[in-house]
Image 1 (cartoon, rainbow over the protein chains, first blue to last red):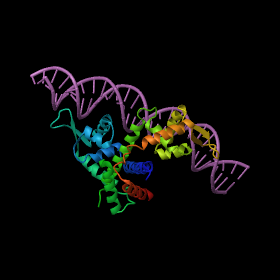
Image 2 (spheres, chains in turn green, yellow, red, brown; image 1 turned 90 degrees about the horizontal axis):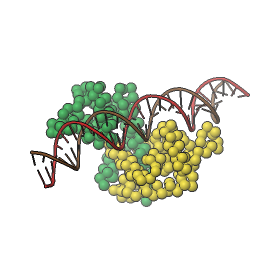
Image 3 (cartoon, chains in turn green, blue, yellow, brown; image 1 turned 120 degrees about the vertical axis):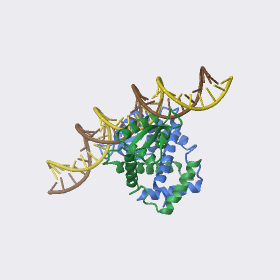
Image 4 (cartoon, rainbow over the protein chains, first blue to last red; image 1 turned 90 degrees about the vertical axis):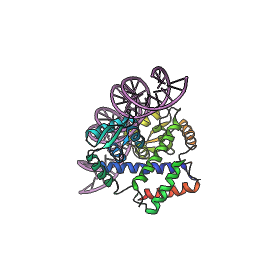
Length: 133
Length: 133
DNA sequence: CTAGAATCTTTCTAATTGCAACTGTTCGAG
DNA sequence: CTCGAACAGTTGCAATTAGAAAGATTCTAG
């Protein structure tokens, strides 16, 4: 039987490399890593809570991050059409532009560069299966 | 071509599940998640720096975590035999005992439970390849 | 042998993150 | 209807984490 603990370490290691990659992509810009991830996830309008879910962090933290993105003029808090409690986060034109620039920067020197096309597909399949539970 | 961004999200998601798993394993004990991970990694004596490397955190943070483990009587800072700058972290008898108990708790309901033996080996092989570069 | 660069740890400080309480809104049972 | 429970978001506060500076030791070029 394989060692589940070692497998977890490998995944943690890769997640850490991904995090490092994000940090290297934002170094030199005026964005923090958290802000960049938020921007990345905002390809479609989301509520605060939805964004928190995608970022795996507390909603109070999203309040903080979005505050700063809004000050930078990249995101707007709009009233939610159906639910007056919620807010819809939408990118400004500038936000859209910075997002596409960011994503193109993300896509070079990916931590998965050592894997060829077939391996990436195989990895994707295995990860989906592991997460499906 | 597969979407590298989505692959990264899958890995992050799995890493997050692993983190949640650790937290659920330590809830009810007097250990924090960081302390538990430190304990897990101390299967062999390590220096502060080595432990920081395995925990993916700053060395100043390890000082903090080890301080508390030492107060709990689970770890001892011993002078390093070769290098008087460094310290060797070794588990006490109580530390060893808590470590094995912790690891056995880690091994039930693993986030990788949805994968059978073959899949786990395949995943391990792919992760190693991705990390090898 | 020795001076300077590098390394290991700690301390101090700042930034990030999570938790609990609170406001305002929606939902559902009666 | 309407009242209480549930939920979205914010705020204040505490805890975790990282970064930079400093002290002690080791390494290395000359």
